[in-house]
Image (tube, rainbow, N blue to C red; front, side, top):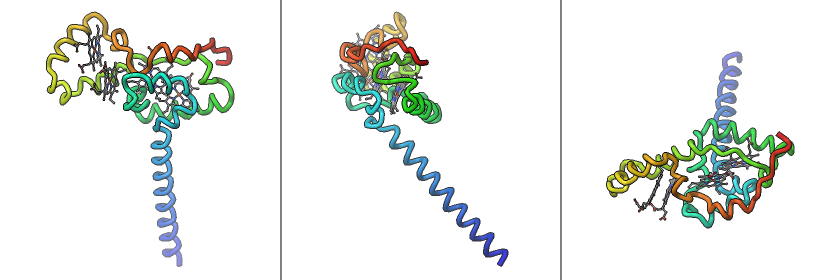
Length: 157
Ligand code: HEC
Ligand code: HEC
Ligand code: HEC
Ligand code: HEC
């Protein structure tokens, strides 16, 4: 009797763990989709739709790694739901160096560079003047459209 019940616990426990892992994975996937981002960042969707990267998802440029994305994401949902920050109106921080790393990861990827070696040579030259891709490229968002949001000063936090 003892043995059977401990076996049952083990099976039950394993099933629960599997269900939780699958649910967490599903949540992580859903919350990485553009549709989810756009619920809070409508202006940025418009400026992105008209930019040079409509086929590149939000996360590809904005990721700081899965773990940081998800913990920062939970904080953002909390700030929004508790009315501490209104992402449609308030000033938002920007992490340009992190975005820049993501531009480089895509555009200076080995296979891509091998197809157009002069691209890298010219860019090694360009980047002596300014490290930041956005200094020369209006990438991601059409700035004029993005700035229609006219972010206000953050009063709350
Ligand atoms: C529930 C609303 C909400 C959703 C959904 C949301 N955000 Fe945000 N976002 C915010 C808030 C609030 C801030 C400001 C956070 C702060 O002040 O620290 C913010 C800030 C940002 C910023 C600027 C600061 C930074 O972390 O780089 C970017 C970029 C951003 N969000 C991208 C995204 C992307 C990409 C998604 C989808 C994966 C997304 N957001 C989903 C509410 C949201
Ligand atoms: C090709 C890369 C790229 C993609 C794709 C992209 N962004 Fe951005 N995003 C940027 C860059 C670059 C900036 C910073 C612009 C600046 O401040 O010069 C930025 C800034 C932001 C900010 C900060 C607000 C601000 O005013 O600076 C938010 C929020 C944001 N993006 C949301 C999104 C959302 C939502 C999507 C998808 C619908 C998305 N981005 C897709 C590159 C991208
Ligand atoms: C997920 C990969 C990915 C990321 C991240 C990414 N790009 Fe792109 N980018 C592309 C693709 C795909 C295209 C369109 C096809 C092409 O020209 O190679 C493109 C096109 C471009 C173009 C050429 C547009 C034109 O006029 O033809 C520039 C410039 C550019 N990206 C700069 C950037 C910058 C700057 C960043 C960072 C803010 C960035 N990209 C982030 C994949 C990416
Ligand atoms: C000092 C200005 C400057 C900087 C900084 C710069 N670029 Fe460029 N980029 C250019 C110019 C000019 C061209 C067009 C001529 C060429 O291809 O060399 C270009 C072209 C491109 C193209 C299109 C290539 C093609 O023909 O398909 C991509 C993609 C690109 N840059 C990505 C980036 C990324 C990513 C960064 C950041 C690591 C970056 N650039 C930094 C000036 C710059």
